[in-house]
Image 1 (cartoon, one colour):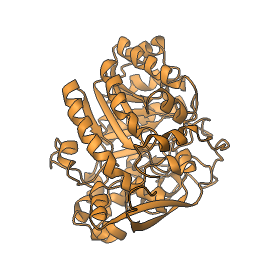
Image 2 (cartoon, one colour):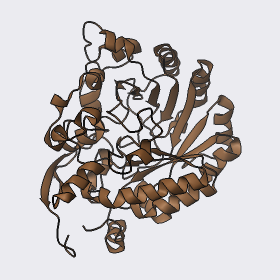
Image 3 (cartoon, helix red, strand yellow):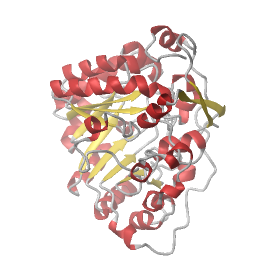
Image 4 (cartoon, helix red, strand yellow):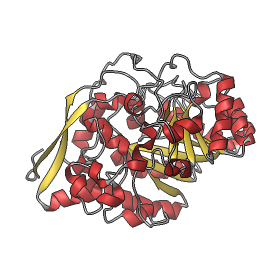
Length: 426
């Protein structure tokens, strides 16, 4: 495929038949993991500011780009009592904000009890939703419980969004959910995944969210995990970042005009000419290394704890709160310690030789892990795409082994470095 902005290529993808993939096959891999003998000083100093909690994997949509393959609840999801005790442990660990996700979080009948408990412990509570069934009554109940803000997923204009979400009318319902949340007094934000279908729609999404009163917009790259791995042609190629980032820069300027806060996702980077525009408000004026297990943690609906909610469960699960206290998982689970210990020597490929290697350390652990089965070399980097382009080269990903069909699964990709094709060729 050529430039992702070319209408003929995008139209073909929109018409393409979606893969028929069965409901998730639950892995038999053990959820319980042994912990290391003791915590080190750096493990005790490090505390998560933000926890993202999948309260159920049940969902009322089957989105084509869903990394968790949400749809049906996990076996043995946490009980209400276990959830409320987890809220206590989160507060005692020092968490300041808890974001509730799914699946679809509002499908959990005790969601308002969980929100009230989070607020009672002094933590800010937010939620991410597809909005398929979020009407005004439900929005008011969430607001009454103390929900501070909610982020509605908008992944394109109506045709694009409905294609990616796998159901006609989902865009209309998402817009209705935005209005319900706003009318209920919940601060409204929007999140968007960027891929070859959604990329040309980004300016229109910004117009929509500004018109509907959203105060912030987070954008991130669609990652090759779960159902997204089943349609690799929809994913951006690394060289597509050359077209994406000038557009993002223009959108940031328009966000400032609208009074909308722009939040780049952790995998939207790194260190290209627009870095200060994207992350100039951070203490160092630019991004840094992955925060999984350092400033963030993720929790699955059966109590599995990870350093980041997006990381594959089998490789990155540190154990469950049914087997260990949350503080012990945070301080003594090998998987959660990974970014605390990572050095340049853990990097490979281009990232190992990069000028920014010690600062960036391959950026988003999730993005690289699901491509190659290991972290350390991340081709979704604007600086890297520019450097390759100066050499007359580009990087292209080819799926070699498909994903098996489990939640948070991934395939295996091969990275091909090749000359930039002459104009008019793919």
